[in-house]
Amino acid sequence: MAKKIIGIVAGRHNGNSEILVKEALMACEEQGMECRLINLFDYNIIPCTGCEGCTMQMGAIAQGQQKEYKGCVLKDKDDMDKIVNAVQTSDGLIIGCPTYDLAPSALYLKYAHRALAYEVSFRLEIGDLKKNPNLVGGLIAVGGSCHDWQSMALEVLGASMFTQSIQVVDQMMAIRNGRPGNVLLRDEQIAKAREIGLHVAEAVNTPVEERHWLGDPDEGMCPVCHSSLIYPGDPHWDGVEFPFECAVCGCGGDLVKGDDGKYKFVLDPVHGRDRDRNIDKARALHLEEIVQTRIEFFQQQDLVKEKYKKYKEKQFPAI
Ligand SMILES: Cc1cc2nc3c(=O)[nH]c(=O)nc-3n(C[C@H](O)[C@H](O)[C@H](O)COP(=O)(O)O)c2cc1C
Image (cartoon, rainbow, N blue to C red):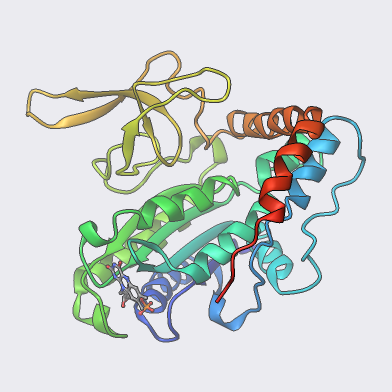
């Protein structure tokens, strides 16, 4: 049976993101893959209401207080369930997303935040999902500017991948594309999109345990997820702390200046991947954190009620 690749575009119809994703998908098609493409502009996606219904249920199941996970409260109200099912029954996913205000556009974020109700490691942990779908991903961020004005684009796209346990094998930042079709003047970007398609196809045809990063080995700072964002670590909820951490995958280590004068992010040889969000078990620890925070909160309801008064009673005029 042909392997299935799905493209998700969050940019304009016939825009730069769509062109690049189509190029990547055409390469997959030439490798015998069955390809589909959806543009999020064509679907109804209601923003996450913040009700926490998904994690409340997951926490209750983890604590043995509930049996079955019923999913997002908006499940039957829009197209999100259909989209996630299409993704999770595919073998590979290629995202094309415009950068707005340094990061992925709101349309993409709306999709990504709703997809959190389908968090793969949490659902595996509570037995709602029997098997990791083990998808492979390719990321394409598209902006009018260079890296300086797209500084969180690939990183936020990357964050939306680990929550679905999707292993990113290549990525690109398409720079200096403003008007729709601008990217047609950039042969090297079209060629890179094609390469991403080929890399996704190659990884899909590789056994899960042998899959690995196929992009430029020097891409980004993090040796695990290739993000460029490394920041000084702070203590986590359970006291774990690293000198520096990757903002995307959470791997820990230190910044070390090499003989070439360049800084490298070197993982702690023992604990560096303890918090690697690409690993389902490590990520599922976050469900434990959510449950612990909630237990502390519910144990102090009298105090919360008393302190709430001041804020509930105080009103400011809206506009
Ligand atoms: C509201 C808005 C904000 C934008 N912000 C950025 C930005 O911060 N950095 C950047 O490089 N490009 C920015 N752009 C440019 C788009 O990323 C660019 O036009 C891109 O090619 C759009 O992709 P599309 O053709 O697939 O829709 C912005 C565009 C819009 C409409």
